Image (spheres, rainbow, N blue to C red):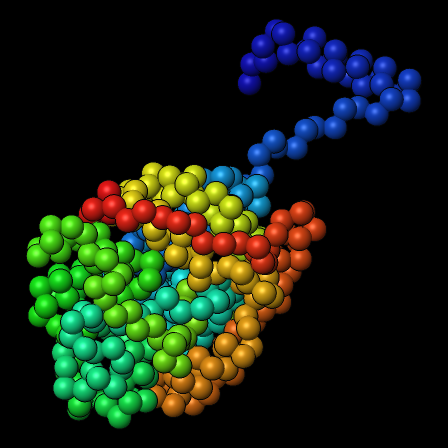
Length: 375
């Protein structure tokens, strides 16, 4: 093999430099480590489409909180044909977001999924009826057409109906109508009652024009029956993972980092409603600025204040959700091992050490103006 002529002088120079460093007692400069550490890639499967319901996660990504934690987070929107539990159980995502009753139902059927953070501390589920219908209680829904989206969203409503002597699973005493993901059936009065989240479908009704007046509908036109008020409110959006995945210590460290960054995103959204709404809008939600602003405000109300720190499961609330689920047939037996709070507590502790308010005791809802069509 030929050796280029400049090679031998170069070797001699390197050797000479080594002798000089050695004679002077100076260590040779160590090679620099790579400036960029490989980020841990994880996927988060949302319960539903892009909207302010998930603003904290989008904020954590946009503000660089995930990156700072060494994470590369892929946020996957959900939809009517996507079940987060199935996505996570199959290994297509490390983290999922869904309501606790849906998670418990999945576990009851044999899945190995574990809630590691309960972000929403109270239920946003309601049933809407028209004020002039006279249907202002669950009991008065007997013999009526009651709408719900189903696909795991029905448990709070079904529990309330069973509590009042009806069997929605067999259409006994009430007729369940599968509600589309719009409020058209309700606005057209084709159903007597419609399921509505405080942060979404309620706003859709208020953003619609009353054909009789030509003006937007008002809260005074509606009966808003909250599942919390009828005693069947259940815990909703929480973060879950596979049980076998979280047993690994490396994955526990990843999960703790993910939760800390996500919680910081939610804290940002609590304290910066307008900017956080803008972050959501940059991710192309279906509905506009007015609707997302309303939603951000109402979602904050389901999280804050968080007495034990954001994401830490309230044992009493969990027990209530599990008991109602069992009493009304959502699950066959009371669950064990369905959640763990150590990772959320560790994340909250880390945030507090960095001066972050993870409780939000002084938070108050803002006044948000309803806009036509949510624009």
